Image 1 (cartoon, helix red, strand yellow):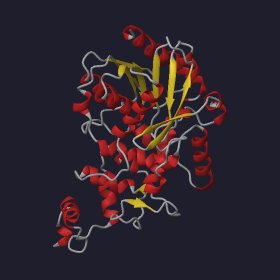
Image 2 (image 1 turned 90 degrees about the vertical axis):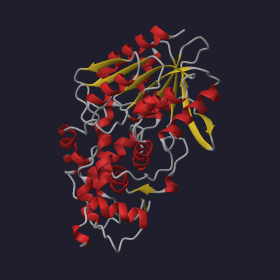
Image 3 (image 1 turned 180 degrees about the horizontal axis):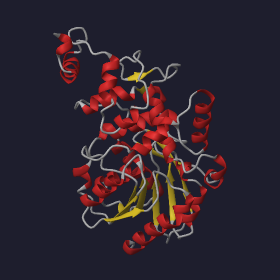
Image 4 (image 1 turned 90 degrees about the horizontal axis):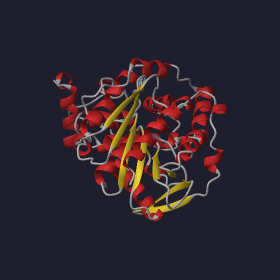
Amino acid sequence: MVGLLPLNTRLRHRAATDDMDSHPVAPLEVAQHLLHSRWLGKCADSFHTQPHIRPEAHYDDVNSAKVPAMKHLIFSLLMIFSASKTAADFSRDYLDGAAVRSADSNGTSITYRVFNEGDLKPKLLLVMGLGGAGSAWGDAFIQNVESQGFEIIVIDNRDTGGSDLFTDWGTPTVWWQILKYELGFSVDAPYTLDDMASDSIAVLDAEGHEEVHVMGVSMGGMIAQVLAANFPNRIKTLTSVMSTTFAPHLPPPSSAAEDNLRDLAGGEAEASREELMRQRGFHPQSMERHLMAIFKTGDRTQEVQTITAPTLVLHGSEDPLIPPAHGVHTAEQIAGAKFVLIDGMGHNLPESYHDQIVGLMTDHIVAYDQ
């Protein structure tokens, strides 16, 4: 009779009673169910989830030599954000040359850098996406924004750069946590997007800035949305780029994202890609915890509907990871928001699009900066 019970029923029973014996759930069976997850299911079809993964564990031993297949999947998603395949196209020397400052966010140390300071210059906070420190913006983008006359505050999200890392918490078993989310259970995470938004407020307080403009990309766009919703008196304008409200009806990654995942190599090639990501300012060891912060926070549609800051939503027409419908939905929730679809852009910030992105953002800010 046990085998005839639906998987959802047995998982809910296990969560309520912690009784694996009466309603056993095979890890491989759980993994197969996970393949239908609205966010990662299409991509996960490219991988074989190993049956040795224990569903009762909420995190893996940080020193374990066995890395779950889902970690490879999330790591490859980060590669989609990379502007190119060669490190020669990316520079962060200008970013790294700026003095590092720090702020205390309820006991968590957050580092940041400030560029083009000036009392009369409009203040712009930049928030990077999944696994990215401030250096992931790259010199070319920062200098382009700087040329528009902004004072720029570039934050290292918690768990990246010089900000406090959460390695002692461990690495979550991503496929298990996402399955819990899909079934309506709480996700284990050391922090939420609300905590990460509060980190930005701590930085603004440290700099003495009462109000700023904010731009965020991908997960950074989600954090920027939380900032605008939770701290309306601190945000003058919002620019949300290739981001989402995380509403459940929105489409999953496209087939193009699947094709990207199939190119993921192992061994030395994978190690080389991880090193490339580190050179670009991304922290692979933190990305699973960032992902869990997104799932822990969940659907933010109602929260986004409360945003009153003038809002610009930018999205690439060829974004394979977060399809354009996510950007459309974000703009539809905010009164007066403007949506711009950038033709040909994917889930990245290639230099060929910098002038267009910075120009749109600048026009938006100037129209409302008082």
